[in-house]
Length: 229
Image (tube, rainbow, N blue to C red):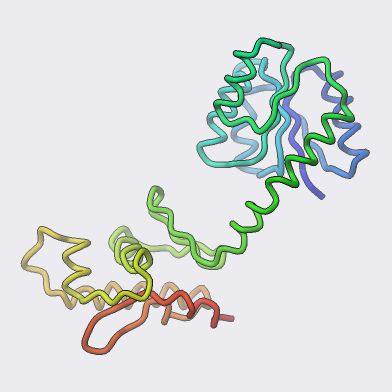
């Protein structure tokens, strides 16, 4: 059952909308205070959000801007404003659709269903992605599991990942992660690789994801992740 968050400080409107969504097979939650929205979304990850712009303590546009920093959850904005500039502002900051009050609750449900259908292929693709390297947050997930790497281990993994099947020598890897340290033996890379493989294995994934090429160095082999249990 898909979960819709209704953000609306007019309780009569919120109740009407929630009744229509529940009748259409959705689970709903309601928040009336803008300051509560972002923490709630971070904790509960709804499938979509229907959000009024005019809210106490923090308006809907600011809520949406903060949500877009960590989530692409579908958002439909609601407002009594009808000026084109107001609609464009909402869309500019990441709204997927925009409705003006008064509106038909039945039409609103249909719009929400259409947006959820449109977003479903993207969500499915993300969930099916076996390996995800986020260089902004320095994180690696394998089959949806977080690989707890140190900063240096992340740098080593990311280097190999970004050039699949290419073989990197120990010295090439060392030059990449510590270019100004000339007194460090390239054998330190073996230790980093060993730690990375140990952490990969702890997730029940083949440590050969980071493979060895005898006498040459190391490479990334994503085919190995398909061989894992």
